[in-house]
Every structure is written in C-alpha cells, then in structure tokens.
Image (cartoon, rainbow, N blue to C red; front, side, top):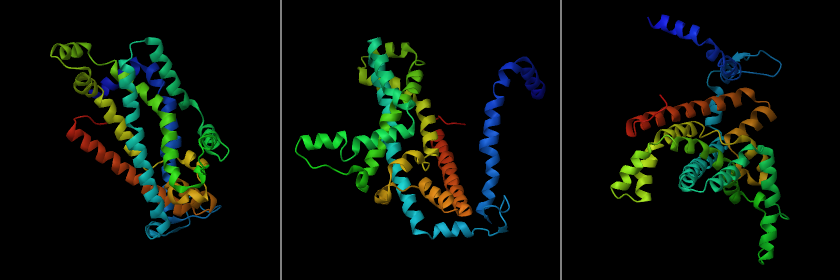
Length: 302
C-alpha cells in the first residue's frame, strides 16, 4: 500500500520531485562518492600510484598522529577556537533578532537588517584583506592608537591577538545572515500568546522569556546541533589567510595542519587518517547533541 502511495505521489508531482535531481546529484558526486577515498587512511598511497593505495598498513597512520605532539597542539587550538566561536558567535543572531523584533519603525528595521547581513556576501578573501588592512602597523586601528599617544601594536604578528581577531571577524560577517532565520521563526509565533501574557501582567522581558524564546526554540536547537557538528571544522580559508608562522601557537588548527601535511608535504594517507578521525568526532558530536536535545527540550533533527 505504501509503495503504491509513493508511486502515485511521484506520478502526480513529478515536476516538483524533478527539482531535487540536481541537488541530489551534487551530494552524490561531491559528498558521497569521495568517501571511497577514505580507504587510503588504511593503505599506503603514493602520488601517481594506485588510486586506492598500494599496500595495506592498517592503523599505522592513526598511531602516527596519536603519537604526534604537533597534532594534539593543533587539536587543542581547534577546540579553543571552535568553542569560542560557538559560545560567542552563535547567540548573537538570536539577540539581534529579538532586538529587531522590538523595533516598530519599519524602515529602521529594514535598514539595520540590510547593513547587518551585507558582510555575508563578501568573499572570505575580501574579509581577510579588510582585517589585515585595518590591523596593519600603518592601518586605521594603529593610527587611532598613535592619535591617543599609545604605541602601535603588531596585532597580526602576536599569537595572543589571533583568536580575538578571528572571532570578532566571524561575528561581523555572520551575525546578520543568521538573524534572517530567527526573524522568520518569530513570524510563526501566535500573537494571541502575547495578548494572553499582557493580560496576565507580563512585562516585555517576561513575554520574551516565556513566549518568544520557546517559540523559536526548535530553530535554535536545530542550528545549534548543526553548528556542533562542524565544531572542529573551524573556517579553514580565513585562518589560512590570516595566520603566519609567528601566530602558529594559537592559530594553527586541524584544517590548516591537514593542508600543510597533505597538500604541501604530499602525505595524503596521513592527512586522510586525520580527516577521517575529525569526521568521526563530528558525527559523534552531532549524534550526542541530538540525543541530549531530544531528551531535555524535546526538539531534535530526527
């Protein structure tokens, strides 16, 4: 019966289902088929040799990075940078959406929205260039420091400043775009709930806490789980463009380490083992976050 129902739905709405063909092909070709290449994490691969490696080495490459102090250093950097990004960047779109929801002047609301999400459309290269120009020794920030009698600070050459620079640039670039999703979720909240809260004497803060936040909780939980899944995939492009050997102590993360080991040095099997390890951790984090969310707040991805 279910098979006939599925076939009938496909026959009836084949035009709509055909729209999913290209996205499915994209994921199959660029996401699922490349997974077969993970086999070189267990085989010795040499450029120009067998596509899936020449000899079976088992867990040799996994033991290599487990015993590599450099890997654990970049792993720690990735945890710190990913944790700061999740802790500081994730709540900002929620806060901005709640603030914009309270604005009653329509043109002002649209203006703030437009200005806040425009940086999302800038290329990572452009954003990195802006950051480097602003923080250079002769840039605008150091010009302002000199104007007040302070010494210039080599921000981009000091490891202690890198995390603040990266997280603040992520805030500026992503806060507006993330707000769009929460503003859309806010429109689905029944206004009669606000009326009932006002009748009960609830202040604006109480209405936000007891009506607004529970109304957008499914969206918040879904995005949080997705962000936790990419916890270790700290922005490779931005880190690669902003860091330098002087800032390696705090800036070098797994993705940049993989780039140097795999692409620059040609140790593809070793890099594949590290990448597979990172993917397994990401999957574990997603499953754990989804399980905890389902048990505690009743909302989950599946």
